[in-house]
Image 1: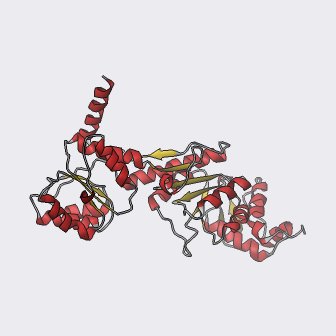
Image 2 (image 1 turned 60 degrees about the vertical axis):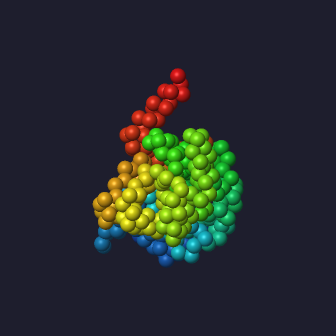
Image 3 (image 1 turned 90 degrees about the vertical axis):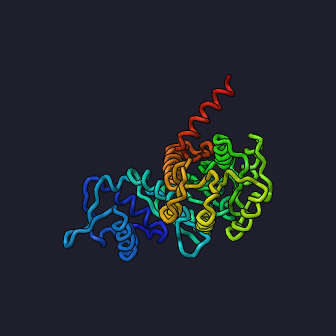
Length: 357
């Protein structure tokens, strides 16, 4: 029997053992594998069962454990779930889905959860991970994890909504996130395209786009006074009634949060004369409310956030693949939802031609 290997290295040793048996698709008995690897039958069975659940192996009754070359040759990718939570979960399911869609053809994908950051190197080694992706990284852990991955040569890609606001992201950093500056610019352009000048911004109080949106409106000569920013749903009715007495509201930006939607639709239903141009995301709850209030029509100017974050996840997966192929550090990427409003698109083209002339 070979020298005994540490428990946390059994998975990696077993993976190499399987890859070395490219001449057959059937594994030897558990006892044989245990003797050749120098570890207990219990640990071998535990990891083989996990590989079976992941689709690497297939058990046939009274025959044995089988594998296929295409399954064995696929490296494993780890997607980190929120390490600060005792119950692992994915913060952004659409980003996660996009990653899985892109990676699953060539890789096995596993959700990785650790309680202490020091556990990660051994976890990566024991699972034989070829790379890591982190969806919506936690601010407190991000710097240490980045240093740890660089020290151990583990390709890491970050993906989320607010990375460039919450973290100090350098130019070459393997990170993909929402471009808040461009989004604020597009939202301001949207109101300018329809000639709207009296805007109300209905948003959670700490959204990073408030100062940026205000700056972009100013470029069109549109002011956004403090009283026109409504931070809480319960303030909506009172503040709108007060504003309407002296401020002819013709545009309203809703920066997504449930509670805002319901309050706004109820207010518009009870005030049929109040129909400003709405910049609002295409969200399942919004679509539901539109069915409940058929007199309120919304022409969405952007693709759905679900579609956007799905694409974001796919692009993050491609960046991770490039990192594993040798392009260790890549330029950070900022992405924005696609415009679908035809009038807005035409206005943008005309406005661009006007500037060029």
